[in-house]
Length: 261
Image 1 (cartoon, rainbow, N blue to C red):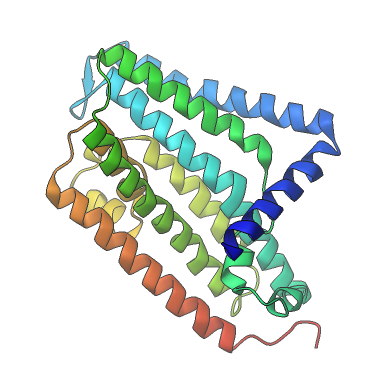
Image 2 (image 1 turned 180 degrees about the horizontal axis):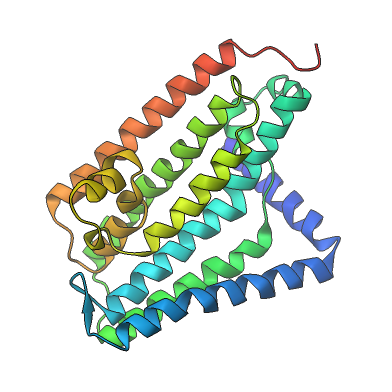
Protein backbone atom coordinates (compact mmCIF):
# COMPACT_ATOMS: atom_id res chain seq x y z
CA UNK A 1 0.00 0.00 0.00
CA UNK A 2 2.86 2.36 0.76
CA UNK A 3 4.35 1.86 -2.69
CA UNK A 4 0.95 2.38 -4.31
CA UNK A 5 0.57 5.67 -2.46
CA UNK A 6 4.01 6.77 -3.67
CA UNK A 7 3.10 5.76 -7.22
CA UNK A 8 -0.12 7.77 -7.01
CA UNK A 9 1.72 10.83 -5.68
CA UNK A 10 4.32 10.64 -8.46
CA UNK A 11 1.63 10.29 -11.13
CA UNK A 12 -0.23 13.35 -9.79
CA UNK A 13 3.03 15.32 -9.73
CA UNK A 14 3.79 14.29 -13.32
CA UNK A 15 0.37 15.52 -14.53
CA UNK A 16 0.78 18.81 -12.65
CA UNK A 17 4.24 19.27 -14.15
CA UNK A 18 2.88 18.59 -17.65
CA UNK A 19 -0.08 20.91 -17.04
CA UNK A 20 2.24 23.86 -16.40
CA UNK A 21 2.99 23.96 -20.13
CA UNK A 22 -0.37 23.13 -21.73
CA UNK A 23 0.68 23.94 -25.29
CA UNK A 24 3.63 21.55 -25.02
CA UNK A 25 1.32 18.89 -23.56
CA UNK A 26 -1.05 19.06 -26.55
CA UNK A 27 1.76 19.35 -29.10
CA UNK A 28 3.46 16.27 -27.68
CA UNK A 29 0.17 14.40 -27.79
CA UNK A 30 -0.41 15.43 -31.42
CA UNK A 31 3.12 14.42 -32.43
CA UNK A 32 2.60 11.05 -30.73
CA UNK A 33 -0.54 10.48 -32.83
CA UNK A 34 1.43 11.40 -35.94
CA UNK A 35 4.10 8.82 -35.07
CA UNK A 36 1.39 6.19 -34.60
CA UNK A 37 -0.11 7.03 -38.01
CA UNK A 38 3.31 6.72 -39.67
CA UNK A 39 3.83 3.30 -38.08
CA UNK A 40 0.65 2.06 -39.76
CA UNK A 41 1.95 2.83 -43.27
CA UNK A 42 4.34 -0.18 -43.60
CA UNK A 43 1.60 -2.55 -42.40
CA UNK A 44 -0.92 -1.12 -44.86
CA UNK A 45 1.57 -1.35 -47.75
CA UNK A 46 2.62 -4.89 -46.84
CA UNK A 47 -0.89 -6.26 -46.56
CA UNK A 48 -1.90 -4.48 -49.73
CA UNK A 49 0.28 -7.03 -51.54
CA UNK A 50 -0.43 -10.22 -49.56
CA UNK A 51 -2.94 -11.75 -47.18
CA UNK A 52 -0.50 -13.12 -44.57
CA UNK A 53 3.01 -12.36 -43.29
CA UNK A 54 4.77 -15.21 -41.46
CA UNK A 55 1.35 -16.74 -40.76
CA UNK A 56 -0.14 -13.51 -39.38
CA UNK A 57 -3.27 -12.07 -40.97
CA UNK A 58 -3.97 -8.34 -41.22
CA UNK A 59 -6.24 -8.25 -38.16
CA UNK A 60 -3.74 -10.22 -36.09
CA UNK A 61 -0.97 -7.82 -37.11
CA UNK A 62 -3.10 -4.88 -35.96
CA UNK A 63 -3.52 -6.56 -32.57
CA UNK A 64 0.25 -7.03 -32.35
CA UNK A 65 0.92 -3.43 -33.38
CA UNK A 66 -1.60 -2.22 -30.81
CA UNK A 67 0.17 -4.23 -28.12
CA UNK A 68 3.51 -2.83 -29.29
CA UNK A 69 2.17 0.72 -28.92
CA UNK A 70 1.03 -0.04 -25.38
CA UNK A 71 4.49 -1.32 -24.49
CA UNK A 72 6.06 1.79 -26.06
CA UNK A 73 3.66 3.87 -23.97
CA UNK A 74 5.06 2.32 -20.78
CA UNK A 75 8.66 2.47 -22.03
CA UNK A 76 8.63 6.07 -23.32
CA UNK A 77 6.19 7.33 -20.71
CA UNK A 78 7.65 5.87 -17.52
CA UNK A 79 10.67 3.56 -17.74
CA UNK A 80 13.04 5.34 -20.15
CA UNK A 81 12.63 8.96 -18.88
CA UNK A 82 12.82 7.89 -15.24
CA UNK A 83 15.95 5.79 -15.68
CA UNK A 84 17.56 8.42 -17.92
CA UNK A 85 17.06 10.90 -15.07
CA UNK A 86 18.70 8.37 -12.74
CA UNK A 87 21.75 8.15 -15.00
CA UNK A 88 22.05 11.93 -14.89
CA UNK A 89 21.74 11.84 -11.11
CA UNK A 90 24.55 9.29 -10.83
CA UNK A 91 26.77 11.51 -12.93
CA UNK A 92 26.02 14.72 -10.98
CA UNK A 93 25.63 13.30 -7.47
CA UNK A 94 21.87 13.96 -7.18
CA UNK A 95 21.37 10.21 -6.86
CA UNK A 96 22.48 10.64 -3.24
CA UNK A 97 19.08 12.17 -2.41
CA UNK A 98 17.35 9.05 -3.72
CA UNK A 99 19.43 6.85 -1.41
CA UNK A 100 18.52 9.04 1.58
CA UNK A 101 14.80 8.31 1.22
CA UNK A 102 13.26 5.42 3.21
CA UNK A 103 12.02 3.65 0.06
CA UNK A 104 13.72 1.12 -2.18
CA UNK A 105 16.00 3.09 -4.53
CA UNK A 106 15.25 0.84 -7.49
CA UNK A 107 11.51 1.55 -7.10
CA UNK A 108 12.02 5.32 -6.88
CA UNK A 109 14.36 5.39 -9.88
CA UNK A 110 11.75 3.63 -11.97
CA UNK A 111 9.07 6.28 -11.43
CA UNK A 112 10.93 9.51 -10.93
CA UNK A 113 9.95 11.17 -14.21
CA UNK A 114 6.80 10.40 -16.21
CA UNK A 115 5.52 11.74 -19.53
CA UNK A 116 1.71 11.77 -19.30
CA UNK A 117 1.18 12.56 -23.00
CA UNK A 118 2.44 9.08 -23.85
CA UNK A 119 -0.96 7.88 -22.64
CA UNK A 120 -2.16 8.96 -26.11
CA UNK A 121 0.01 6.20 -27.58
CA UNK A 122 -1.48 3.67 -25.17
CA UNK A 123 -5.02 4.74 -26.12
CA UNK A 124 -4.11 4.44 -29.81
CA UNK A 125 -2.80 0.94 -29.11
CA UNK A 126 -6.09 -0.11 -27.51
CA UNK A 127 -7.98 1.33 -30.49
CA UNK A 128 -5.77 -0.58 -32.93
CA UNK A 129 -6.35 -3.81 -31.04
CA UNK A 130 -10.09 -3.19 -31.27
CA UNK A 131 -9.75 -2.60 -35.02
CA UNK A 132 -7.76 -5.82 -35.32
CA UNK A 133 -10.42 -7.92 -33.62
CA UNK A 134 -13.10 -6.19 -35.72
CA UNK A 135 -11.17 -7.15 -38.88
CA UNK A 136 -10.96 -10.73 -37.61
CA UNK A 137 -14.68 -10.64 -36.75
CA UNK A 138 -14.04 -12.16 -33.36
CA UNK A 139 -13.31 -11.18 -29.78
CA UNK A 140 -10.87 -12.59 -27.22
CA UNK A 141 -12.16 -15.21 -24.80
CA UNK A 142 -11.95 -14.72 -21.04
CA UNK A 143 -9.23 -17.41 -20.86
CA UNK A 144 -7.22 -15.61 -23.55
CA UNK A 145 -7.56 -12.28 -21.74
CA UNK A 146 -6.47 -13.87 -18.45
CA UNK A 147 -3.41 -15.48 -20.02
CA UNK A 148 -2.55 -12.30 -21.91
CA UNK A 149 -2.75 -10.39 -18.62
CA UNK A 150 -0.26 -12.77 -17.01
CA UNK A 151 2.08 -12.57 -20.00
CA UNK A 152 1.76 -8.78 -20.08
CA UNK A 153 3.15 -8.78 -16.54
CA UNK A 154 6.04 -10.93 -17.75
CA UNK A 155 6.53 -8.55 -20.70
CA UNK A 156 6.67 -5.45 -18.50
CA UNK A 157 9.00 -7.17 -16.04
CA UNK A 158 11.34 -8.19 -18.87
CA UNK A 159 11.32 -4.72 -20.44
CA UNK A 160 11.94 -3.09 -17.07
CA UNK A 161 14.77 -5.49 -16.23
CA UNK A 162 16.59 -4.81 -19.50
CA UNK A 163 16.72 -1.10 -18.79
CA UNK A 164 17.63 -1.62 -15.11
CA UNK A 165 20.66 -3.62 -16.31
CA UNK A 166 21.58 -0.69 -18.52
CA UNK A 167 21.29 1.80 -15.65
CA UNK A 168 23.27 -0.45 -13.32
CA UNK A 169 26.09 -0.25 -15.85
CA UNK A 170 26.15 3.52 -15.42
CA UNK A 171 27.64 3.08 -11.94
CA UNK A 172 30.81 1.87 -13.67
CA UNK A 173 30.58 3.51 -17.09
CA UNK A 174 28.84 6.80 -16.46
CA UNK A 175 27.80 7.70 -20.00
CA UNK A 176 25.46 4.90 -21.05
CA UNK A 177 22.71 7.16 -22.41
CA UNK A 178 23.66 6.14 -25.96
CA UNK A 179 23.14 2.48 -25.02
CA UNK A 180 19.64 3.28 -23.76
CA UNK A 181 18.90 5.03 -27.05
CA UNK A 182 20.11 1.98 -28.97
CA UNK A 183 17.93 -0.33 -26.86
CA UNK A 184 14.95 1.94 -27.41
CA UNK A 185 15.56 1.85 -31.16
CA UNK A 186 15.91 -1.94 -31.15
CA UNK A 187 12.51 -2.11 -29.47
CA UNK A 188 11.01 -1.11 -32.81
CA UNK A 189 11.76 -4.62 -34.11
CA UNK A 190 9.14 -5.92 -31.68
CA UNK A 191 6.36 -4.42 -33.79
CA UNK A 192 6.83 -7.45 -36.05
CA UNK A 193 5.96 -11.02 -34.97
CA UNK A 194 8.89 -13.17 -33.89
CA UNK A 195 7.96 -15.64 -36.66
CA UNK A 196 9.32 -13.12 -39.17
CA UNK A 197 12.84 -13.86 -37.91
CA UNK A 198 14.55 -17.14 -38.70
CA UNK A 199 17.34 -19.24 -37.16
CA UNK A 200 19.79 -17.41 -34.91
CA UNK A 201 17.85 -14.14 -34.97
CA UNK A 202 14.75 -15.81 -33.54
CA UNK A 203 16.83 -17.20 -30.66
CA UNK A 204 18.38 -13.77 -30.06
CA UNK A 205 15.00 -12.01 -30.02
CA UNK A 206 13.58 -14.65 -27.67
CA UNK A 207 16.33 -15.19 -25.09
CA UNK A 208 19.07 -12.53 -25.44
CA UNK A 209 17.05 -9.43 -26.32
CA UNK A 210 13.62 -10.97 -25.65
CA UNK A 211 11.42 -8.85 -27.89
CA UNK A 212 9.18 -11.88 -28.45
CA UNK A 213 8.41 -11.99 -24.72
CA UNK A 214 7.61 -8.27 -24.72
CA UNK A 215 5.14 -8.18 -27.63
CA UNK A 216 4.67 -11.34 -29.71
CA UNK A 217 3.81 -13.79 -26.94
CA UNK A 218 1.21 -11.59 -25.13
CA UNK A 219 -0.43 -10.78 -28.49
CA UNK A 220 -0.43 -14.48 -29.39
CA UNK A 221 -2.07 -15.25 -26.04
CA UNK A 222 -4.77 -12.66 -26.69
CA UNK A 223 -5.34 -14.16 -30.14
CA UNK A 224 -5.53 -17.65 -28.58
CA UNK A 225 -2.68 -19.01 -30.71
CA UNK A 226 0.07 -19.43 -28.13
CA UNK A 227 1.53 -22.79 -27.11
CA UNK A 228 2.36 -23.93 -23.55
CA UNK A 229 6.05 -23.89 -24.52
CA UNK A 230 5.90 -20.19 -25.43
CA UNK A 231 4.00 -19.44 -22.23
CA UNK A 232 6.60 -21.15 -20.05
CA UNK A 233 9.40 -19.49 -22.03
CA UNK A 234 7.87 -16.06 -21.43
CA UNK A 235 7.56 -16.60 -17.66
CA UNK A 236 11.03 -18.14 -17.37
CA UNK A 237 12.73 -15.35 -19.34
CA UNK A 238 10.98 -12.68 -17.26
CA UNK A 239 12.02 -14.37 -14.00
CA UNK A 240 15.65 -14.79 -15.07
CA UNK A 241 15.97 -11.23 -16.36
CA UNK A 242 14.44 -9.70 -13.22
CA UNK A 243 16.60 -11.82 -10.88
CA UNK A 244 19.69 -10.83 -12.89
CA UNK A 245 18.72 -7.16 -12.95
CA UNK A 246 18.07 -7.08 -9.18
CA UNK A 247 21.38 -8.84 -8.46
CA UNK A 248 23.39 -6.52 -10.72
CA UNK A 249 21.61 -3.44 -9.33
CA UNK A 250 22.39 -4.35 -5.69
CA UNK A 251 26.02 -5.10 -6.49
CA UNK A 252 26.37 -1.82 -8.38
CA UNK A 253 24.72 0.04 -5.51
CA UNK A 254 27.22 -1.38 -3.00
CA UNK A 255 30.08 -0.03 -5.10
CA UNK A 256 28.53 3.40 -5.64
CA UNK A 257 30.67 6.39 -4.74
CA UNK A 258 28.95 9.76 -4.82
CA UNK A 259 30.05 12.11 -7.60
CA UNK A 260 29.50 15.00 -5.17
CA UNK A 261 31.92 13.67 -2.55
